[in-house]
Length: 220
Ligand SMILES: NC(=O)C1=CN([C@@H]2O[C@H](COP(=O)(O)OP(=O)(O)OC[C@H]3O[C@@H](n4cnc5c(N)ncnc54)[C@H](OP(=O)(O)O)[C@@H]3O)[C@@H](O)[C@H]2O)C=CC1
Ligand SMILES: Nc1nc(O)c(N)c(N[C@@H]2O[C@H](COP(=O)(O)O)[C@@H](O)[C@H]2O)n1
Image 1 (cartoon, helix red, strand yellow):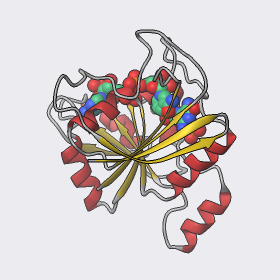
Image 2 (image 1 turned 120 degrees about the vertical axis):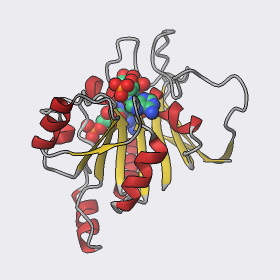
Image 3 (image 1 turned 90 degrees about the horizontal axis):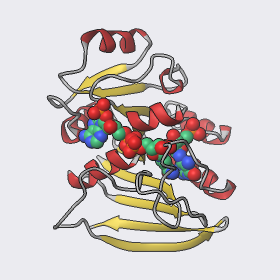
Image 4 (image 1 turned 60 degrees about the horizontal axis):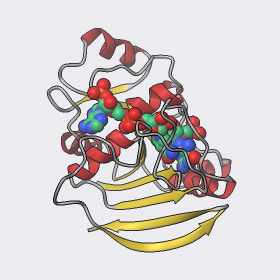
């Protein structure tokens, strides 16, 4: 599985505010770039924290990208994937509608009634991990289902885990010209944090986009 993490942060590294409400950090040109990255992916993944905070749709905005994908014999939108150990994704979340395939990654400890409700709502549930979603296991199953390239849109808990598991191949970070602040505001990589053996990156590109900077990296 090739994994591309994409996120937008303030200059102080925050993905949103201490209230965990969605903040538009990217400008129009960056959102257009994000749409292209989505279109080039087989799946777009977020954590359940992002689903509960933002209620994202994670489909393509530009119809021409859907047309391109149809012409290539692919589904018009990439699949949507939620990492959700306890199956907390609401059945009326936008990510569960019929605009694209939706995979909900759950752990073995997810309540059966929640799993059944998500399946009734049209989601495909993938069980991986005992109490928390195991990304290595889940990605192996997604690969069996034809997902070879996954774009990860956040949030900070999930991005940290993917770095911890050594699963990230590329990172695109848009740094908007804004200060958010807040010691409890989510950052690019939250979780427990590293104290040694920090993942290191190769800087591939630096580009001005809107009034911010797009940084692109390969992960060592
Ligand atoms: N600016 C940007 O580019 C973006 C900003 N955001 C912002 O980020 C915030 C949400 O981020 P955050 O709270 O970090 O939530 P995440 O989206 O990272 O979701 C975290 C949750 O995912 C579940 N999960 C399942 N398996 C794992 C695993 N192996 N490792 C880690 N988590 C796992 C956990 O819940 P459980 O144990 O119940 O499964 C965990 O609490 C929102 O404020 C949102 O607006 C989000 C995306 C992009
Ligand atoms: N690239 C980017 N820039 C920002 O400024 C953002 N706030 C985000 N957020 C991500 O986009 C998701 C919303 O997707 P839809 O428009 O609903 O398809 C949101 O949930 C974050 O993952 N991204």
